[in-house]
Length: 532
Ligand code: UDX
Ligand code: ADP
Image (cartoon, rainbow, N blue to C red; front, side, top):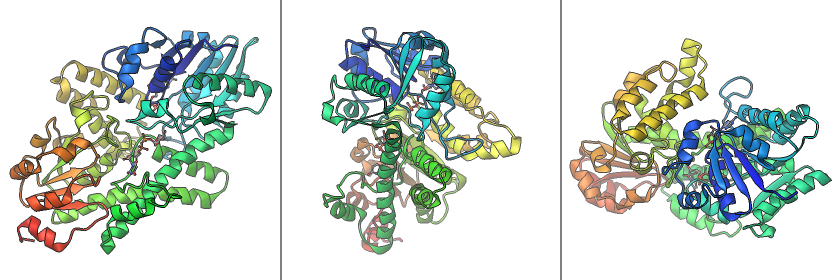
């Protein structure tokens, strides 16, 4: 079989960029990216793509309408495709067995059922979404139990290792491409077909083939190892603060050992993003399910350490601000989970802000991509994230109401659509969508405590402190002297990403705090003008 048509169900962070690159590198293949969300597809077909990734726009512009198509017509795309990627979201379950830990496979299952319903002839089905080990087996079961005469399937696992902000770079020059398949002649043939797609631009020695289960587990293990490194250095950062060592120096020394390596040793306010937490919890759940409690506990500690780091940082802010932030204004710089992305999923900012809001702080939030860029997860999302976090369980307990997240998502998409049309609707739309009982038990309070700014200098006016929660490069370039002049004194700066020039900040008069390092009393005295 010569692959001519590829379809991808799910036009999200993974499916969109991955298939755009496939279309770009394989002009001989026609790629249809389909999604159930009309809004998402409309955005992919517009000048404002639904996600921001450096280089993505150029790739999409070159291929769209040529051999890359975005649509809501899932059935036709599936029918015509030789190979179907499933690239839908697999969030952590928020209900039932495995709640809070297991991956929710309902979207995957719906895709498998849809494929079984409409497919004709032979199809290769490729799971790209992050899934628990043996999910391919479940997909195979659903497909074979619903197969019609003349229809056959081969299911492959092909996990994605792209990181947000560098997705196109990672896709074009991957460290490896992993393909897992059934160990049979048909399985090998399907693996060869997918290998052929990637071999258009990836050297064959970088394409690894394994069993399906090994491939599925490798994805979870890779993210768990990366998250573990961040938690390890964050654990050391707490020790540094207590002992007077400097975590950057320690990380530099440790990372020079070629066996350890220097990457992913940047201490921070904690890791975020849609993958690390989800995959760790998934791993923990799998270990528990196969009766390996020690293994489960080991990986659970990585996420516990992350939570500890976020809380520790928030507590330190409160402590430094004379043990109260009630009615104090704090300028928050950065809400995305890392720089160069508009994504706020599991961002440490959500947790730190929630903590500060609980303490009654007024937050002036500024994030370059959320405000000035495309509001993919814009000001609206900032509020959704905070309110979801704060009230999700409480709302459920109080009202016995199970949140319909799909409904919430479509409401928010409508709101976002409005936001695209005119910025004036913003506050009205936010109020109307998010004061609903399904979203928060205290909407008025949170709403009053949050202001979203499009200019960082406005955000710091009359603020008691600046809290840096994302490592955006532009934060390093600000005129902090100018900022200090409009802030309340003593003015504090809490650098949760270790990106600023701390000595310079202390010299101009900021009381400066960062992760993994305590400044000496002399410098603090200088910062406070000797008042402390
Ligand atoms: C991650 C994996 O890197 C990628 O391979 C996988 O496919 C998806 O999950 P991503 O979530 O986009 O990618 O972000 P990543 O760059 O890995 O960062 C995750 C989090 O860790 C961010 O919040 C980041 O700020 C934090 N981090 C990373 C640190 O705090 N310190 C570090 O040294 C590195
Ligand atoms: P990821 O980061 O894994 O790519 P996203 O949430 O960014 O996740 O994207 C997943 C996409 O999958 C969303 O656009 C969502 O609308 C889509 N999706 C989920 N379930 C289905 C389904 N059954 N059919 C079609 N699209 C779906």
